[in-house]
Image (cartoon, rainbow, N blue to C red; front, side):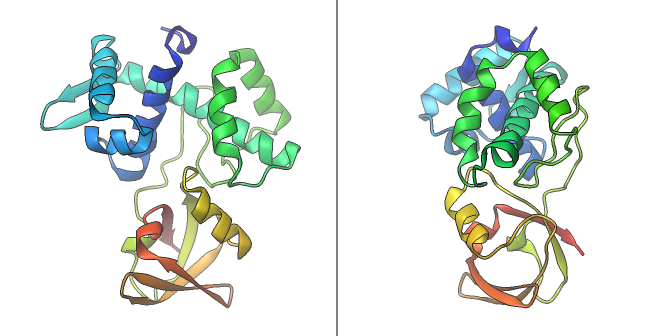
Length: 220
């Protein structure tokens, strides 16, 4: 099956499934998928049934949803399109990193494989998008950044910011205003009443712990 044989909505579900797997682990609940896609539970359930019938996902009632090998292959194609387009919009068209997600969502469905391969070459074969997300290569290989988030990190440990969720535009704008980006080293100075005080290159910013779940980190 080719990616373009799938309806756009099915492509979006595969991409959403991969994003959730990438951030939280191999199996995703329908509830998480509903929250990620903004669809109603019955709509999401029907979409999962269709994908399961096509052999692209496995769904057990109380065990959640996971991608099959075929589903993962197609998910990598749409994720590759999306992240290359986000990179192009930022580096070549002057978009800020909080602006690109919705436009990339629209454009990714209109691209041919040839266009994406040439876009990849034009950009110099980047391995990360502007949010720090790894970009799958043409063979579907992708780096694993793990699932550790800033919300779960201990106070005082030096950390490296790996990525920020591209759907959280408010968080992206806030971090952008403070010049915070993937690759920066940071340390949580305090964790009080759901608010983190974070030292980034000597500057201290405050961040709600709920938002910190959208920031992937690793020990520096």
